Length: 178
Image (cartoon, rainbow, N blue to C red; front, side, top):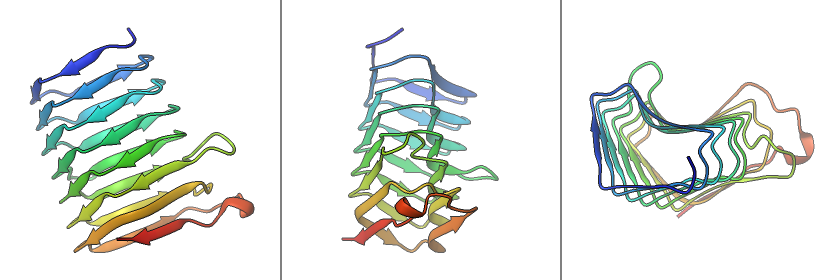
């Protein structure tokens, strides 16, 4: 289903909350605790995740094979374990990640082959990445990640780069700190 509002819910001790082929939804003021994925988008475009609190999950928010999407004004904390990640991307394009607090996670923000679509970008701005193992992890960098006005505080590694980049024209990352 498309164009739904998911608001004011608490999801605890579940496996995953998944939006699969489900577009233009708003997930607002929810709480997710002790699950694998708080929200996992697969082939689900243009979803908005705002003012949620996600604690003690393996992954906070994950975009896989998606285009568009906004994650703003959320608290994502204690996404730990072998796959612990606050916000992640796998072959996703056109996302905006802004004004979130991402703290005490294995990886604050992880990106794999994202942005995926040519000439698209991922905008990561105004977030606080604090006390994570790695603040931001870029794998298979394709370019187009614009990171501005983020705060990096007390992470073991602030920004890490893994894999290789194959797009020389887009291989620079705009990285500024507030």
